[in-house]
Image (cartoon, rainbow, N blue to C red):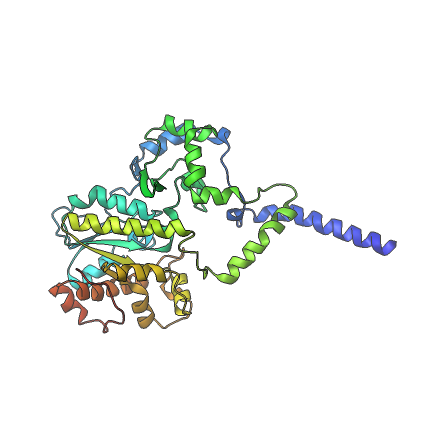
Length: 387
């Protein structure tokens, strides 16, 4: 009996300590628990500040100010580029983006219209909004895994780990209806509308979110935080361990469901069609984080079917991974190419620029780029051709 009581006392003490200490881990593992907004926490002044900021865009959700990071009036640009932070180059200075390094290699400038946090839908829509205003020979669309995933989001609060920064942000989303993709724009252009939508769980917008926002649906399946935390963490621990073991090397990480890939296909074709309509050569540039490169080096391609699609449709494209793997052998984790937050650093962007130089020289009759490619190693990859 004494032994049993001692064991029970030890168990109760252990569980009590766990219950008191686990809340300290909530910020670190918050993505595994259900997120939500308390209507009482919403402040009208913050909503007004959001919509009055220079980065608010009622059509795209948000944008950069200025809209092009490196625009100089009167300067001639060879190409314009769209995508997320891997196009923008958020963790490097303006002289260390792959666009800037491409210009040093070739003498040809690429306009940088990338925006951190963008989905592929936003990138394509921004091109349609501004592309004609910047006459260039080439239009570059940066393809990166997170841009595919974000395209399934309408209210990004449920996608981003730093969700508080997106409390008032909606983005456009393409939803499939009657066999066709239909564009749904952000619901609000003013603060009053945002406050009404976000403070009213019964607002019609939430029916749209719950039906079409994949990340909202995923959030609703997660356990809530609260007592008893021991049981809550027991529910999410298998997922935490599984994701650490897989290290993102899972088949459906890039394209989380069948509609995800179908939507990416639609958006790329839309980009290609509009590029050609306005007299530009479309080029899809496949970009990867250092963590992605490690997985590719291990022989796993999570975007094989995307590469197959680009080749099958003869869409001009440049896969930067083979070139980077061929040129960079300093470490197996590719951390020498990583900026602190996981984007490419100066060296990583240099390799992207070199890959782009060779790729463009292979798919278009650009003499200046062919001259520049003579300073680089021979091509180690195949690119799509221009019809």
